[in-house]
Image (cartoon, rainbow, N blue to C red; front, side, top):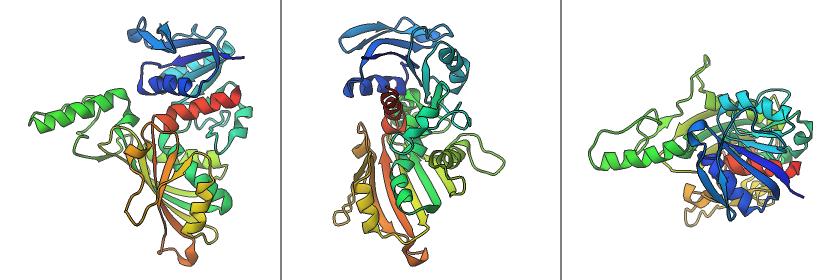
Length: 333
């Protein structure tokens, strides 16, 4: 038996990815309602041999809906998710609106699926960079508790949405043609350039993206004492985030031991070919479900083999967003 499903924000990059993943995973549903802002209302979307008309997202959109997948931005989540819950739906929200709410489970199904049962109508999808880091770090942490985690991210244009991806293509053409570069969605030129993530800087000097990774990881791991520091960077890649992760463990762990743990971990693929200097690239992970891990090596600056470096690539639109939400929906069903 299927469910009555709604997608809020269906015309965006993550919304479109929801549709692809629902089809690929053959998620059973009895009905599907496609919702977006008023400017997209009336648009036709072909899906699984049927034509759907996009409806305007309102507080009255959720009658008889069982599960609502939200990727319409934090403001709209705060505005419309309570109405969906009141109508009887379970909301799986891809924005940051509810992630740190103590009443809302923050879930990566490979890590803490049991938290889903604690929901009170809303389940939060973590930040994309948090998910991509934690899918491989969690099995290592379970085997040997991580004391400290240092992360540097290399985040694709896809993290800023469909309009950012299109603008980066436009920027590349403008640079090559010697024309002034358009920066309307992206704050700065991203084509042939990179910049530290342009989310708001807090009083501690960290930006919001960096603090999301710190606070969300502690919540997902149920480990408030883990020491985490991050530097988040936007790079001129279309989609798929990469991350350099340095881990300090409680006890010794060798690269060989870590590799064996990761080989058996759900949602992880190893790509670690030292002989050919071939490690995960954005193109390897794009369009795929797993987080790809390589450059698994000892951190020789930490004594007694208690440190490791790993390199991770994960598709921000899939596991970093839409896939994680659909996996939560599958757990609910």
